[in-house]
Image (cartoon, rainbow, N blue to C red; front, side, top):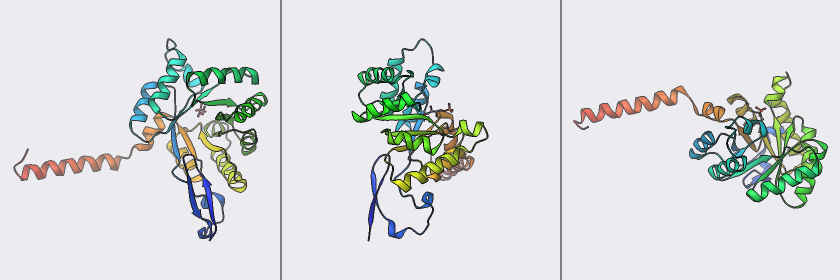
Length: 254
Ligand code: E4P
């Protein structure tokens, strides 16, 4: 019996691949639970999501930070975000040259050494990713829209590759297809980098990337909350409580 080890975002699992009955990569993929990150720079939302116990990281970007109170100090906000979630925290550089990106990375790593440095997929960004990867500093390559961009980022040493769904859908391209194709390429070549599904706009995106086999989905707070909701859950809780109250009354209790 041949056993293979499948890399996952948080651990590895041994799978018996002789038991696989399906042939397509998306259905033969065996991983541990897909991780969920909050895609936000809003401290209150991040704290609430983290308090629920199912979040293992947070991704920020300059646009998300720009939505927050301008009087907040960025470093303090990032450190508060990191402390709240207690796991992966991606912080994006804004330089467009490799030296500038590396200087920013040094600064961010002085704030907290566990930071993941988020770098845009531009040629200078790839140089910076290679330099950081050579020092074992984790990187998250962002603004990826195709499997080939993701493959190039992975070969530059990216720890994470962030595929954007929503922005592709916005221009009538198939965002989910880009993630599915990336997963297929990853499975074909045992690529090490972890696939983050980003630019998620609604729960159906989240379900799609979970089925496709993304390792991680970074999800806006609102979509996380929407994904928890079901009217039958609420109705069920209400009827259980009503029946319990009825029973207690019948027993002559409170
Ligand atoms: C996360 O890493 C990305 O920056 C984010 O998901 C982009 O989302 P948007 O396309 O909704 O701005």
